[in-house]
Amino acid sequence: MSNLNKVLTEVKTDILHASISVDNETKEKNQKEDSARMLKARRAIEKHLEEKRLHQAISDGWDE
Image (tube, rainbow, N blue to C red; front, side):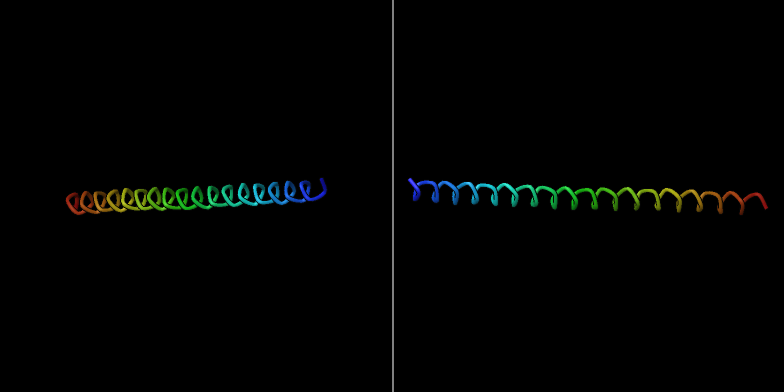
């Protein structure tokens, strides 16, 4: 029975390590997706502000 317990313990350890690896990969994937989403949002905000400044500059030019 001792040998069977040793094998079961090794299997449990392998399963635990596999589970941790999957969790880490999932977290890493989510972080990459979050970073990409934040970058896209930041670029959209910068584009909006630049267009707003451009429209304001054009308006100011026509008023003078």
